Every structure is written in structure tokens, then in C-alpha cells.
Image (cartoon, rainbow, N blue to C red; front, side, top):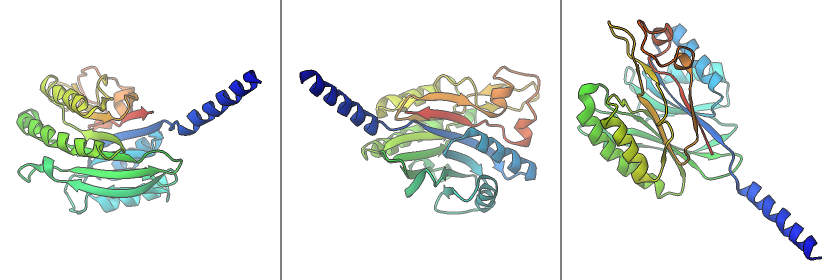
Length: 273
């Protein structure tokens, strides 16, 4: 009898663990350079997005949100939805979150101004999604920090502002993921800011080991950069798509056609537990 009771307890406990375990979720970020540049870019970008098999994708540099949404529905299907900042300005480099409505329901969206600093920089888009399969809400924070080597001081201030936004998000009990184009140009200072963001927030710098995510088109060749990052509730497993996957991360004499036809950035993917 004791053995029977022990077996019952073991089976019941195993079922509870299985029920409480939340499935792995694939999330991606993709800076689609000045979208839409032309029809070829539109087709190529959505071919990339479709191949990611990620039900949540943060995007940056969307200069025509309506055209993006139209292309999304045409190429990904009616189940997909996209949320941008609460304003629309043709020619402005918008950030957004697209997601598969068969798997996630939109809870809310918010825009944080703190990282705009003097008003000439970009804020942070926050989108909260509830998994249809159950589990805690996912709070996605999409960033696009100041670009360039000379933008380092501004990025440092943006990181300070971002830390406050992330701290507030963490207090919600949601699963928090911060992703996007951090423009981490400086391998020492910018990466130190990313490490600090993860350490102070209790999140994981999921993309710390990423070898490259972008191409730098220059007269003396095509060096790669690690501009795009993900900081999340789980360390997860990271991978990169696009020409970063097919052409690699070594300096080449010229950039791949992908960098001019689709984007100078590659999609970055994380599988989070």
C-alpha cells in the first residue's frame, strides 16, 4: 500500500510539474533598413520573417507602417497583427511588434519617452502579449538606440533611462524581454552597458555570445558588427539568420547582396524557456 501511495504521489507531482511548465517561445528582432525601399526588399524581408518561425518579432526602421501591415497580412496571413508606436509619421523610422494571433492575444501597448532624452532620439515601444496556451504575460520592449561611434555618450544616457523602464516592467510579474537595435558600436563601452542592464535587472543577456548581426558597408571592405541584442527573462538559445548565417561574420572585401537588397541587419532569434 505504501508503494502504491508513493506511486500516486509521484505521478500527481509529475503532472503538476508538466502543467506548470511553460513551453519554449521563439522571439526575434529584425532591423529592416528603411522599409520599404522597393518591392524586392518587401518580398525578401517577409521571406526572412516567415522562415524564422517566430510567433513574436520586434522590428525597427519601418518608414511606412501601413504598407508594412498590408505586406504582413498578404505574405504571413490574416492571423498576424502588428503594433507600432501610438503615432504614425511617413518617413519616420518606426519600431513595432508583429505577432501570431493564433498563439498570442494583445493585452496592451505603451510608449516610453524616457530614452528620447532631448526629444530627438527614439523612445521604447512596450507590447504585452498573453499566450493562448497559458502562462505568464510576455512584455516586449523594443529599442532603437542612437547610432554611430559619435553617439556613444547619448547611448550611455539612453541605457540609464532604459534601466528604469526595465525595472518597472520587472515589478509587474510579466516575463520581460528587451530587444532591438542597441547600436552597440563600441565593443567595450556599449557591451558593458548591456552587461550592466542584465545584471541590475536580473535578466539574461541572451545574445552575449552572438558573433555578428549587421554589415558595415565601407570603401575598405565589409566588417561585421554586433548591433542587435536581446536581454530576457531566460538565457535561452540564440541564433542569427539572413546573410549573417549564410556568409558568416568575418570581414570581407565587399558586403553580400543581401545587405543592399534586404537590410544591413540580420534577424536575431532567441528560443526562451
